[in-house]
Length: 244
Ligand SMILES: C/C(=C\CNc1ncnc2c1ncn2[C@@H]1O[C@H](COP(=O)(O)O)[C@@H](O)[C@H]1O)CO
Image (cartoon, rainbow, N blue to C red; front, side, top):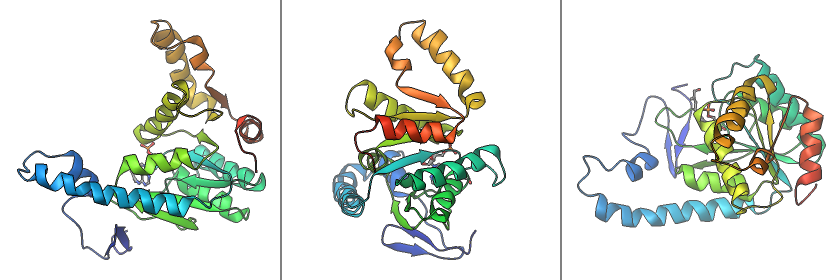
């Protein structure tokens, strides 16, 4: 891994060369940085340039679906096999597939798309322990800022499919649900794949969140739960704004 080429904006890092912090860390963690007031104002230009790069690159994409899932899943895990099948099925249905461009489920989905002849997109993120884009990404962008990257996942996709994952995956899932719930985006299907993995969360949403009045009954219907790849793809085709 340490010999792989890594990118940090315009900077390329090879071998054991590292940077002391990522751009996200420098923006968000101002502890011990007396200069943050002056430096952060200028940082907006870098943020702006990341939006411009993303918008320009993504604007020409065909109808696309963003697929999320664990960065830690082993290649032969059930969720990676599901990610691979899903990627292939979405490609055959005519969608480009956007992932976080990392390992695990992301890589499996990108591989499924690429092998099925679809367009495999990866939106990488600069991390302190960065791994670079997986080998199956055909169109890739490396982002410094999580929030800029998250805009691209939503803006250029017709829907989300969320496979088993950890905090990162939950963040992406709940951002989408909040955007749909507050009608910031409309006709935006969210599919959860992996009934046994997500079952406990769905139960908790129903009994605790809904039970204590923190969400409405309709909010539970904002996502569809399945193990079936065809059902997932059909749901996206039938409920999104733009079909391929
Ligand atoms: C943790 C490891 C590698 C991290 N590499 C990542 N590359 C790209 N995208 C990532 C990475 N880690 C998280 N993400 C985003 O969050 C989701 C997965 O996070 P989770 O916590 O594993 O569920 C994923 O959809 C990405 O967008 C070690 O190998």
